Length: 93
Image (cartoon, rainbow, N blue to C red):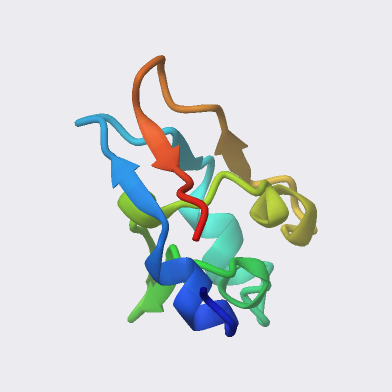
């Protein structure tokens, strides 16, 4: 039985779509108005990565928890559920 958070996250499986269900609305907001890049802190799956001067979104590992929407103080993340049949699959252990 999984005991640590990392062990539990290992049990998560994904069926990825070819199209992202997450989108940065305006990359300039991230670059000019958001010095702390809170989405990189809130997301437990580390979906958001700030590299150079741009925010990259690795939607394939999204846990669909929605914490990035809450954590973004600029409402700069467009978040939708993945289309039917895609997204995260939880397994119990």
